[in-house]
Length: 308
Ligand code: CP
Image: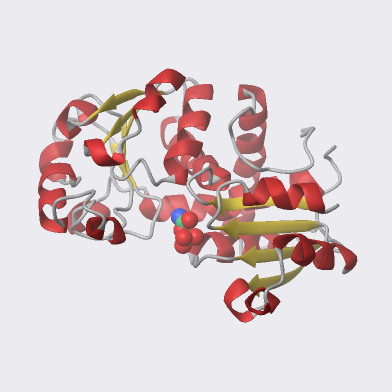
């Protein structure tokens, strides 16, 4: 597959063919992740740097493993222990990495648009691993891969995304990705955490979780960020769980064969019930598994010699 982009900054603007192409490549990476000898030397001689200004377990580790499985040299920078603490700017950090021969920079940053800014400064390919409230493209891609390997398609799936939609870059990337792929997407949550504007982009928005879940093939719970409670955006964690938590009771309204997803990290018994998170219809672990394959796919497409 040819991927005619230097960077992966978001799913907004990617075509159905481009997203399908990434998922097709990712699907071919799954057997590598599952094999005993996880080696596919598509990035031999290439250097990948992960540059994280925010905490991460899944995204940073899976990008690192993906790059290593592809034979790249990998270096990890955590802003809290780097020269960022001495006041170094994003621009200077990026240019410094460029001069070291870096082929790809994977960045997570609290500011929306930071990955786009970095891409203006560097020659390396930039992969957005989450920028503020904007996008987390590889999360939505891995969510779609998990759906596709379960249902054999994305088009026509009814997907309910429930929780703190307002502050969720996962929600935004899934909005762009899933609607482009022809899924029907409903966002649900308290009014204070639900952007009405999503309706303009082809999604349904409701405060009623039961309405969102009714007939759904996929129910995705989003992390409730406990710090929002202080800002008065949710009444209390307990009340939030009662009205918006995903559990087996509310899932009775979903389509038979419905799956439950969560991007992680989970607040068990808040946005998702403990038993539901571990149920046989939970794809949470599968999502993590698909994450490595998706990151192998995007790294190989951007810096493996097939891109631009
Ligand atoms: N889903 C996700 O982005 O998880 P991390 O914050 O652990 O990377």
